[in-house]
Image (cartoon, rainbow, N blue to C red; front, side):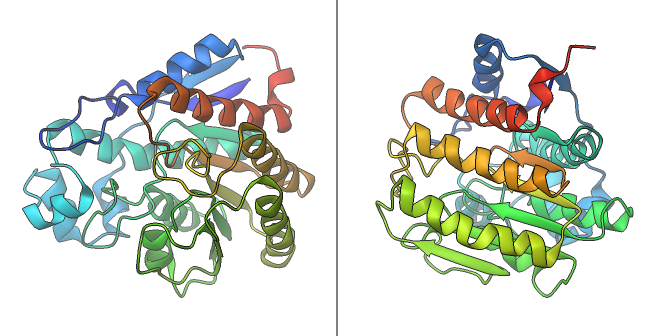
Amino acid sequence: MLHVVHHPAYVSPATAGSSFRFDKYGLVMEALTMAAAPFTIHEPAPMPRPWIEAVHDPAYVDQVATMTVPRDKERRIGFPVTERVMRRSMLSPGGTWLAARLAMRHGYAANAAGGSHHALADTGAGYCVFNDLAIAANRLIAEGEARRILILDLDVHQGDGTAVLTGGRDDIFTLSIHAESNFPVRKARSSLDIGLRDGTGDDAYMDALMRVLPPVLDDFRPDLILYQAGVDPHADDRLGRLALSDEGLDRRDRRVMRAARSRGIPLASTMGGGYGADRMAIARRHADCMIRLADEAGLLLESPG
């Protein structure tokens, strides 16, 4: 049984003046239903403001909560912070935290949103308002649910915000494998960065991933992996450049889960990037990612209940 964290408020219309659309979060749930894989939905609660403020500047959190984000910050985010955007921004970190808690119980769970890895302490950026990965990791460690957490970021874009927000901590390791020439232009410093050339392709990508992931898992020994499972490395993605095929994404996700499962490490995934005109094709890539991760985790052999 695939455990998926989803809330109806994850879906909202595009905001005025922005090309970013939130409909893929609903389409992903449709794609999961059409795939006929057994799944159950867990609904998150909004992340309490003190938990968000433990990572983000309280003044910025208040700007989001009161929908008074300055225009320069909204331009950096990529859309205005309306009431519906504010609500989903509070829910998404709660979803990643809940997915992590479910993963510790079942081995794997997915947040059908999240992966907002560009958000910084006092501003959002790159379609990201709050950094759910950093917030969830910080909270789980503060609660004593985990001592060490690996944030594995395989989105095509570097997880610059996550790197900055967790920099200097010895209990959170950030590993980002991304397109070196892609956004952001100015890269941050993760615990380990692997910048790849445009058009890398399946085999070279897998070589890079498997050269670094096993040693990080064995040396850092995380209690949990938060997996930024962006599908934008795909060859057909509008913002991606790494030229991975469907098979390449499949190999990537399965090898990640096998590496985690063989070491007894629970894994929670977030959706991350995926862009293009064919919204359903993108939704299917996200849904397929969740299904194969659950398959490799052995969860699809479970009966509903």
